[in-house]
Amino acid sequence: MNNLTNNILTRKNFLCIGLDTDPALLPPSFRRYRNPTLEFNKAVIETTHDLCVAYKLNTAFYESLGSMGWGNMEKTLTYIPQGHFTIADAKRGDIGNTAKQYAKAFFESLPFNAITVNPYMGADTVLPYLDYPGAVVIALGLTSNAGSADFQCQPLASGEKLYERVMHRLAESIGPDRLQFVVGATQSKSLAQIRSAIPAHTFLVPGVGTQGGSLRHVFTHGAHAEVGLLVNVSRAIIYAPQVGPGTMSGVRAAALGYHHEMKALMGHVH
Image (cartoon, helix red, strand yellow):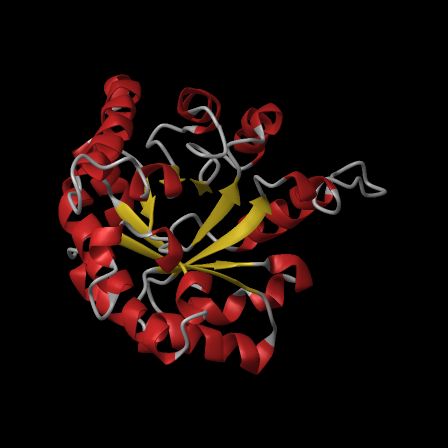
């Protein structure tokens, strides 16, 4: 049993909080700081770390700030307690030496535990990340956006859909300790079928919260014996209405709501 699975079962939740920190959306009380993003991230982590098992940083919100943003990612990682699973939501996808440099950036220069990748250039875009012992690759499978129908859901001559071929191909060659898949919560009709075909790998599930996906449905149709889910919630937690200027009361209340619902759903899991 890996550390993430152990933490999910021990802490009775599978919540990943997305630190998609947009300076334009920060509460006014944080804008007085020299580095509002960093102060906000620190406050969110201090307020929620006992309610989740993972944090995901969407790198676009940091890369857009240039060198300060890269510094913010690095510093934010130092605020996250050891034992929490950390994800660079970078959605990189390239081959050979380029992929090796991305791996170095997010597993060495920035010591994340996992990175999201776009595998649609082929399996060789994924393999360089596995050169880092213990590092986890989270491959896009079936995403939560409406545009997933444009390419991912297109049928192949074999009768498979493209996303099914991609997921099967990767799962056949990379075990569940090193590979996870992004499967959107809004893909409710496909979730049970995907779990049946990919029984052991963990799914990182966006789309619960602001996008309207059902946590109960995700658990009922996507969980396996050791849960095998990380449900990411970003905006619905970090931008939750706050009680009083500059407080984190609303953020904690929102995270606590998901925490309690997950604990209830996991009641029968041992």
